[in-house]
Length: 189
Image 1 (tube, one colour):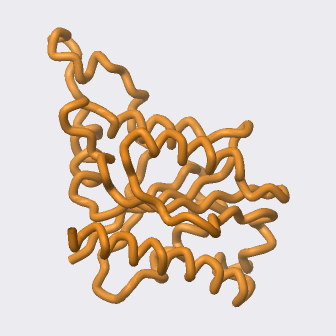
Image 2: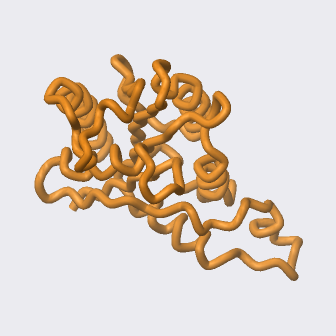
C-alpha cells in the first residue's frame, strides 16, 4: 500500500490549511493510505537530542514516532500558509526534526508536494519558495510547473470546508495527479 503523509503548517483547528488538507485526503487514488501527520505537539528541535555526546538529554518519544511516520511514507505532501513571508515555525520545526540524525534523514529522497495559501493575493508564494529551498537540501523530488499558490484562500472554500469551485478542485487535482505519478515513478526505481 502506498502511504502519503500530509503535514499541515497551521496549528489552528479551523485553519484554511487544514481545510485544504482535508480536501486533499480525498484526491488520491483508491487504496492509497493518505493521512495527516500531526506536528503541533513536537518539542522545539534541539541538537542535544541527537548528540551522542550529550547523555543527560534524551530523544523525545514524539520525535521517534514522527521520524518513523515520515520514514515509512512513500511521499510527503505539505499544506502551508505564509507567516511573515516564510513558513510557520511549527512546519520549520518538523523539517528540522526529520533532518537528523545525519546518517538517517527521514526526508531523504522522498517525493514531496506543496500547496501554499494565503488570505491575500500572493497565495503563500514566499512560504512555498522557502519550504522548497529547505526541502531541496534533502534531494526531495517535487512536481514543477504549475505550482499551487492559492490566493484569497477563504474564497476558495465553501462553508462546509470543501472546494467552492470546480475549477479550483480541477487545478489542485491536476497537481495531485502529477505528484501521484512522481511517487509511482520513484517507487518503480
